[in-house]
Image (cartoon, rainbow, N blue to C red):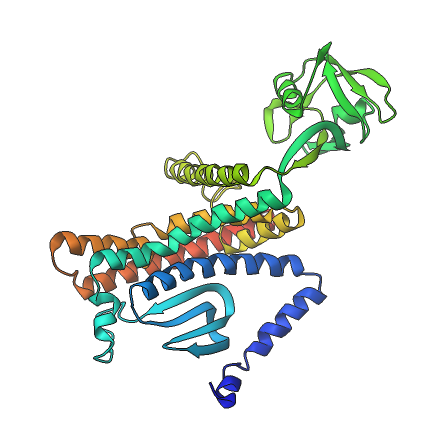
Length: 385
């Protein structure tokens, strides 16, 4: 590529992207920057799946972009233009011939998407969600190797002093008993605990029941105090002491981390479908505090996850959700393309282009309406109304 062409590959829009990134850092918004870049990574991985399989089958890929235009940076290599868009809310992989109405040179037509057999087209489309599933496993695997699993201990890291009950702040049972950070819980009513799970289970099942709590101070002295547990603010049927357990990090062996990453990702996959079913059956209000979340809410949660060092786990969760949602049999989702490709295979002829366009129009309208609805709910939650 000539020097002149190389210069043209850097757009004037790139200054906006650079200045915006620097402002985010200067204003101590690096957490927001990391959250947005993480979402961009998941989208890039998704589009990379389409890109790699399309290239593998010899299809022509015209463009591969991270983010949406205008382009802050772009460069052509071979027949593909690679770029970074100024709007970091998506990405795309443009394969020649996604529509039969597309005008293509004669030499490209045999390599067009629509000219390929159905099984090749479906593999190209499925590769995007598949890459999201693979990415989730890899993210969890690396996270486990780097940080390990978190194990709560019986040592108290924090004592919650007050909770709000019916608009009034009241002291917690831990504060009333004089508990302080650094103590170690031993047991209750003569029963000894060996881990936090036993202590937590005891607290949950002894709401309102007075008992003698045994603990050990940082200096090694054993003390016993009377305690009556209050109702847990997040579960009125469970007991609440008002302490946060200290944690230890245990790094599993690589083979163990790999297995945990696979099983953990499968668990997220299953629970996502359970969540969809609870929304459909009305057990979860989609507009409530536990309901569906849009882009604004995801970025807000991501910032919290970055601060608390569990962002990779959230990324894995989002990656699996992105893969599942894209497999819904609705155009313009990947699942819609797979569905109509399969219909074509069963019927033995292509679906009429006008029919596809109508489905795309309806699907796009529904997506825009859903986006507005979720964004409204996200803002309403953020402002607590």
